[in-house]
Image (cartoon, rainbow, N blue to C red; front, side, top):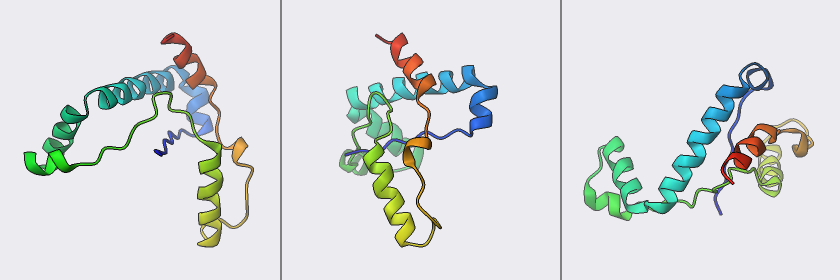
Length: 111
């Protein structure tokens, strides 16, 4: 299972909704391309990291969710790890951590 989390501050989202939507469109297009062309994606990654073609062929690419939605169960699991590690002082309502309004608008455009 892959975990996607795209984070913007609330202030940035409010002041730059078109920029956020442009980023989301680019992210969704990249996710589609990676999933549709895994061999080419491996070569791009290998080139960026200066890896050999043999190493590139062995790269295990995660399946990137095509809708970029955040899985609430994974947020809850991550929160538990952070609490146990002492990195989060107290639990938070994970449903309040994200707003998918702009993502929903972008996803409607592609239908």
